[in-house]
Length: 134
Image (tube, rainbow, N blue to C red; front, side, top):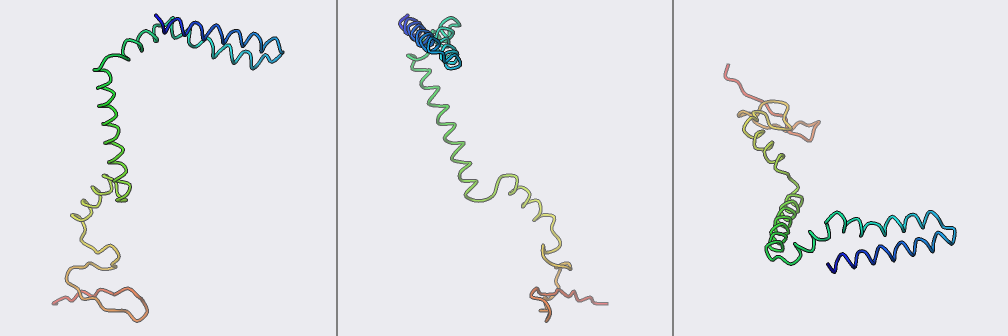
């Protein structure tokens, strides 16, 4: 009841200010002030103010907000840790799949299945030679 009265008074005061502003020939500003001042009375008429006043004093509602806040905090903590490690869940999954399916070294030009590394005189990378027993 008190919230509805306060919202009505705020709307009336805002409309008064809009009228004075329009009298000073600042019609665009007056229209904007009138629009803002109609919001509180609109909230009263739709029942939003009564609903907010009803939930504001229930401990279960505040407990629910606390649980939602804790959930948000946990999500943000895990995202921050993921970003610090530089990998995401999808990247780790792709890396595990690549390890299982990899038969060639990532930077090698030949399969790394028991060959010996020989340093090439023209390159900084070792050249892999595979010995065959033919």
